[in-house]
Amino acid sequence: MSDVRVRFAPSPTGYLHIGGLRTALYNYLFAKNKGGKYILRIEDTDRSRYVEGAIENLIDALEWAGVKHDEGIIVENGELTQTGEYGPYIQSERLHIYKEYVDELIEKGHAYYCFCSKERIDEVREKQKAKGLAPKYDGYCRSIDKEEAKKRVEAGEEYTIRLKLPVNRDIKFHDAVRGNVTINTKDIDDQVLIKGDGFPTYHLAVIVDDHLMGITHIVRGEEWLPSTPKHVFMYEAFGWEAPEYVHLPTVLNKERKKLSKRQGDVAVGDFKKKGYLPEALVNYLALVGWSPESNKEIFSMDELIDEFSFERVSSTGGVFDKDKLNWVNGQYIRKADLDRITKLAIPYLKEANLITDKDINNRYDSIKTMVSTVQENLSFMAEIPEKVDFYFNDEVKLENEKAEEMIKGEQVPSLFKAFREELNEIDEIDKEFAKGIFKKIQKKTKVKGKNLYMPLRALLTGQLHGPEMADIVLVLGKQNILDRIEYVENNIL
Ligand code: GLU
Image (cartoon, rainbow, N blue to C red; front, top):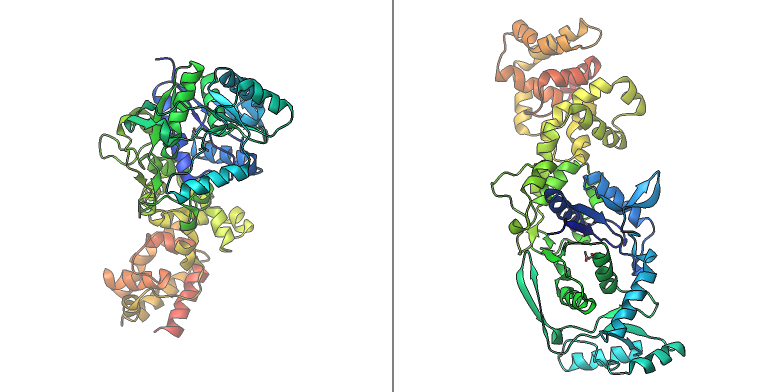
């Protein structure tokens, strides 16, 4: 087999959907596994769906996810540019090429000019629907003589160009996920290849580009499966060798419906904003539709590259389970370097008005310790303000009746007294104080174990379980703890 070349070919219609990222990822993993090349091509021939800035957005999301292409459109110094020998990699810059190839199809009798108005086509469709038939172009212009058609075009008549599919022929191809597929041409439309506005449709552009760019495997979403016979026929019509096909199962929600924007986050950017780690998202997405041989779940990109194969991609849809993603992301957050997590946490803390720019400069270490106390309990970074909120409250909000019961224990006033005495002896809490304070209170009061720790934890956090107490003491600081004691004495005891 010639060297593997695959492509991800999004249309710049807005944002990168999570399903699109998975398609890109599978292309990338396959290419890297085979030592091949992975290309990013922009399919922007549908001008009505073009969104300004969408290309930059796509590239940004792919880069964030670490799915790096070898050829195609890139951003360099803030400008869109291209790299590779098969360019241009953006279809709107290739219009002259498509023109040449569609002319070849017309000459060979595999495409024809169609002069039907939109009104006529709509009428035909309505009639078919009324008869309970699937709407389809009726072939009205198929038999117009080529020379006559050209004259009409020259005379300025409006036209499209359609593919001339053979009548009632089985078109067969092999798909790596689906196996052998056969579709009869009677179930397929004579596809428009050149639209009224002179632009090619996706179907023409994709064939020409994949061929000229030497693409060996077409890895894309299964929504393109019904279009594939048209493409296979076009390869044949041109006399080209068709690539291998790999149609990936759709990414579904838990109800096994297509993952759509109405149900929440679907854009890669949404996950970035919520503070998912890119390597966790990629790890999880790889498992949506593909299963490794072992039941291992945590994979680095290199491990994914090693193990990935299309044989283990299922044909029945991959379910995107947010809870599972949160679990995977939590695993990555726990393992991540504390400085990295702290830096990721800071924007959320600032946004929630819990810290200021001054704090970031003056109290970075304390913020870091605070983050460390909740690192174990985060599913994604946007959760951090609510997890650390208790550090910023002067009031002690008890989580439940059990906490209230603990803090009202008869030994508690003596604990508070000892705590206050110790605090009054120092200027500010340091590591040593934080580590030793509970032993000191124990010595002074002779209270130990649960009766010592539970009420003090409730005092410091409002909760009965949570991060290491010494760390909490260090983060809260002297005044805050004194205020809390006073608050509990005045309002709870
Ligand atoms: N431009 C198509 C899309 O947006 C690409 C389909 C393909 O990969 O052939 O999904």
